[in-house]
Length: 173
Image (cartoon, rainbow, N blue to C red; front, side, top):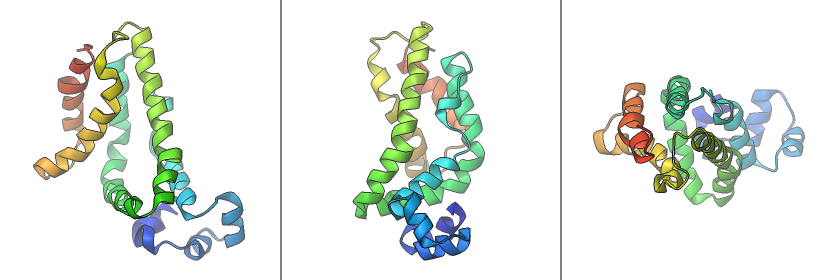
């Protein structure tokens, strides 16, 4: 289904096409998902190369580096797809909500769990102001490099960003 989405984009994706590609009926699709937004968000969630909830290396730096390492292969493949979905979500509140509920919020919750473990291990002070901005810092690393430098954020850039920006902001460098 994600391959089809990549081929035709969100606006071009129809439940008929998904049913044909997956060899199922539209009725089956609608029983499983409320509509196209939920189907797309769920499919993206289940095809992620790494779910943050599964990352626990024993250190904050190790966890953040593991996230980068595991997501490297999918980033190039998914960057254009995610940009297209972000654009489509501006005009489609149902898609925007589905992406937030099924894809974004679970990852934010898992990142907060990862950060709580770092606090519990004594790597980060619990009152560190930057804790509430880590999601924004991580998102910024992915989004702004392409805008500012015209380059995709590769593994080397992201690993350096973790060491130069995120860990020092958390007092964990």
